[in-house]
Image (cartoon, rainbow, N blue to C red; front, side, top):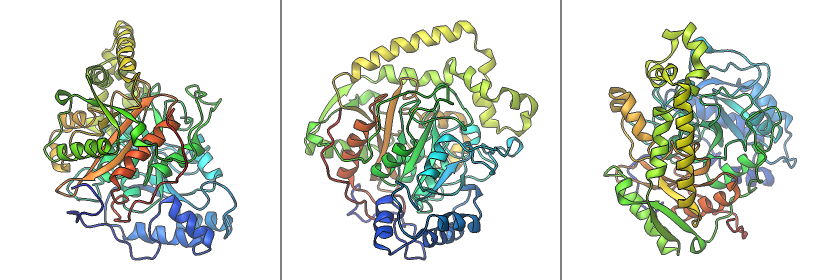
Length: 485
């Protein structure tokens, strides 16, 4: 069961208003026609938030009155700013001046005086901040259960995990509470929630978006990511945030992103796909993967089976290699002063950090160079690597019963991306027989974000699943020739 035409085994999230879909293209059209103004959108958004029954989505909200003042300051007609009047949310490990940054740990909470560069660029582009979303504490986890602010579930089934660590961001977008949300992505924290909430997760090249004002999880690998309803929406948001930031030591001068995600011609694309032995998909996910591949082949794309071993070996290094020391270093002082305030699963995840030696670091660095060379060879003659975003999903109850092993399994196809310096876009492509989302991720070398947007948009358009959990149909992508580089 994959296409929008089927009768899904889930009940769409419906809101008691006439606002409709919050995808950027739909809002822009209504703004330009004069049918809507930002004040009306803000009021409807806050009504939706109050009416939504799911727990654990938000850590803090901008006051309704303050948000209305920001909307009023935009005026009643679009002024050319690219995100004029578009409501959004921010994962609560990104700073917003005057709002607490908790990283889902109340004892850590602090109120910054400056706004993260990525968030500031969105505000300057006319976007309207609604609030800060829940996360796996200190952005450590892929499941969404590691927070004292509640456990959000996917809007498709209250028993099932939302994915993490950008859990609240995924749910807020999927449920139609905001148009897009910022997450962060070190091991898959922006892509796994997208897969479980039927949204798009854009993980840019490392350093393309400034990390200034972001609480680090693993500083050399961290990325600010985007959760959006469509690939085009995610690309437009990324385009606003992208750009070198001299204040960020990890910022890189990379090729410009695409302003719009215009689908590439599938007949011109070649995808590397994992060999059968490397998949390990759950019984309900496997048919959706096969259908996704069949659609691509029917559209003329070429699929090349590859050995995923170098990628999987790389992914295992993130929590089983020297990068544990970097993760521990980000929390060392707080852990020493407040050990009982750190979630037990988070504490366990980084506890081996102090045992990493300098010898381990250099051995791991060399092994990564070897694996990168092998991965580069695999990707040399293809348009992109195509993988399932996650091999399975699970219930909140089952995750809590086995928090370490179950969490690690979720990242089979995500943990290697940042270590191998890849960009990625997670795309929803189907709904299982039980009505749960299934998604794939397209990955390519850093700096190919514009081409990757076109490739991801072609995958998205072939599947045409509804927008998030709202049931709204996926809009047609903008039409203009943008060949993949």
